[in-house]
Image 1: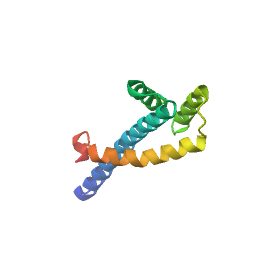
Image 2: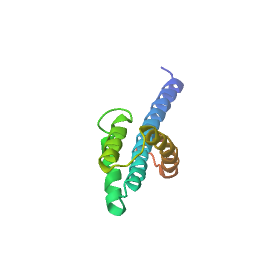
Image 3: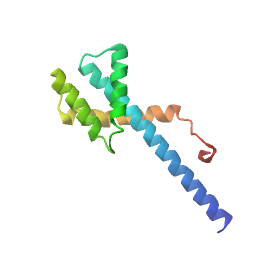
Image 4: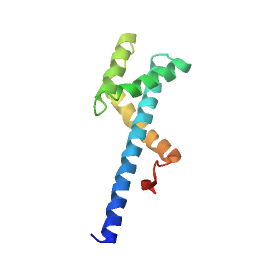
Length: 116
């Protein structure tokens, strides 16, 4: 294998790692932002809202995709009598993903030497 090909391959692998890391951080940020939005809808404020947002982010680790987060938020809304549709939650998640990506890009510092 030529050095040029090895360098290109190494660069491609580093970019994949970087993209995966950015995606993970953006999704975690999105979940927190959506959790804060949901907390506000339920009248939860301050440190309780922060704790709720964290519980939403943790819920996203149950399974791939966003359905686990939506189920949690919808169950919490239903338990508190908050009338918000699943479509509204999905729309908010999309909106917050855009915000999260921008926030992560502003503060992102890659980990490891292979990202440089």
